[in-house]
Every structure is written in C-alpha cells, then in structure tokens.
Image (cartoon, rainbow, N blue to C red):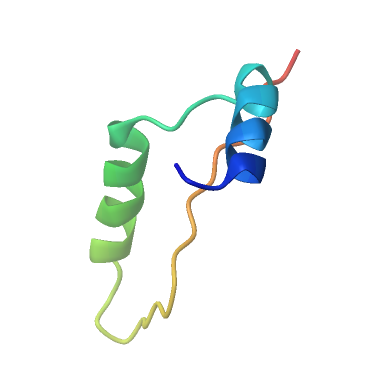
Length: 53
C-alpha cells in the first residue's frame, strides 16, 4: 500500500469491520453465474459490513 491515508484508514477501521473471506467472493460469483442469460450485470462491488455488537 502506498497511500498513507488509506493505510491509516485500514488500521483505524480494522477492528470495526469483518474482513471478507474468499468464500464471500465465491458466493457472490456463484450467484452471478446462476442468473439467466437475459440478466446483464455491469458491475459488482463487494464490501465488508460493520460488525454488529
């Protein structure tokens, strides 16, 4: 990582979010692949969510 601001943000928020696992991404791809041919996805953004207390 070369952006000091991004590194600081990651360090600060690391304990506040659940890190994505490879299985999370695989499930999203599996969902997309299972859609009918008439469905066109232009973009997929996968982001972690805040931890629930």
